[in-house]
Image (cartoon, rainbow over all chains, first blue to last red; front, side, top):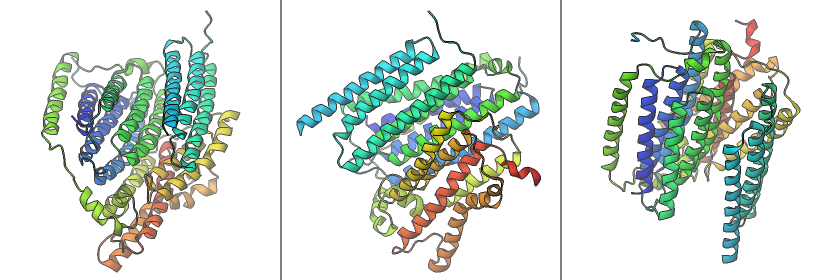
Length: 102
Length: 99
Length: 319
């Protein structure tokens, strides 16, 4: 078990936990939180797999992709938060409507 | 050479002990003001000791200067933010815990 | 990276468990404010994980953008949300469950996904050089000596161009939706005022330093832009708003400077070299620095404008 493998498995754990959280919660802000943690999990897998170079320095291309990904994630989060606020202003609650609640 | 390593290890561990004390205060104190008090004081001293330990291992004066600058900035930010949290808590009417 | 020693194994194991635990608490905490604060703590733990994985550029970007700016955006949105929805509604509204008997199915699906991905990861070869050999071979002609900067600005410069445009489009989306800007609030107290006055010039200097040092050490345009964005957020929190004259064309110019510089450079290089963003090795360093400077200004102003949330005030007379 190397560092790369350990952190890649942690990243997969984060992805699955936040997949569960994304589906289960109905409040939009919690969904946005879950999406961000999902993104962090995926980045962790990418950078962990980039470190499998043995004694040499890690592969720089996934690092650059993850930096790009972090910036894109913050832009998407900002847009998603504005959409949530508009929805809350229109309907009074920041949740998706419950259709078919038994 | 070895003396420097031992000294910096002692300083780092002392800093960690202060951080532990601050965290215990965060968990155990019953009032936001007391928790702020424990956190800022203990963490600032802890970070100062850790910075001193790292400065001994620094390769050049520039790196040591940057480490000291980091400590000073954390001091400034920590003090300012603790003040803001405490005054916000006062405005919200959170009263100081009396026995 | 070498295999784990015992101490490294203990530290990495604790950090991994801590990441999973904080993420779980952030996802399932019944208090929404606590969930956001736990998310910020999660971001800082991720920065530690990046350092352990020998990715200091990613650690800088995560601490500044992932934990700091995303946390600030979430807190600002939470504050606006609390003032929009009824004040008592918030605690009930964010209780977790939709359908309690279907939770087990969803958990089973998540576990299956985890198991499948885990199996794939475990069956990957333990040593894979990836593209590091090619990057190291071409580093001399790229104009910088830090591999991540070379990849971001030279080898995959097209991706960075598109990323600048993504930032701009997100801001356009936020402005078009016409959401509320964060309120003016009362005048800042003396502590916040002093902090802003002392820290903002220092932040600008640090951003310039990060921009310069990115050529040969961890740093670069995105980290510098994030620090500039943090300076903008601090100014906005200290209740400073730029003069009305600065809100029109100068603001637009600063927002567009980054993507425009990339597009213009791409077009010029296409005319000279025959391919988009193909830097000639002799001038590559200087061209990359020019691109990075424009990108830093743009990223900083865009992130601060995203935090502001709504259109700047002076647009009211135009719409």
